[in-house]
Length: 229
Image: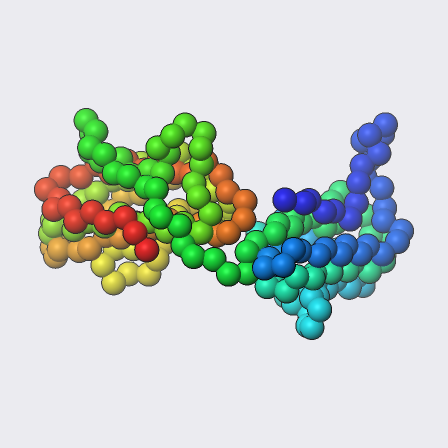
């Protein structure tokens, strides 16, 4: 992973210096690989132009930037351009992103998530070996049936993922998917019908974190556990 940014600090004065020149970053990947770009900070002046291009097209410009969103490029070449800034525009960090190399073609890896019964309920996690982390291009799921008039509480024990790139999500019945992005516990209220619950984890093909651990505390649940693609 390579971090890039357009401004830097004077460590003697702890002040950020105004950028006076244009920025250009070029990357070339090995055969069979492309790139992923995630923009973390984008606070440029109204006159600054920005683009990400590959060998054939413009992937992104300043009008369509989304923060913490993965932009994938299957081309072996990528170039990131930032024009000169307005000299009267002052900000601490103008632009910051990271670039990683990803495979152009890949298959999903064998899932490495497990569920185990514990005193208070069931734990579902990928943290099988300490500090090993999860695999790239991994998909695993935990499915169960919530019987009518029963509720479920889900406690987030651990959550170390690449933000907005590797996805931990769930859906209840026909409802839309909900992303799990922080340590806020999940409470599924009872209803007078049976409902299917699906919790799923999907990682992409570049950098990764340690993973996740969820604890399900429920009453009167019929389990139908699966872990796969």
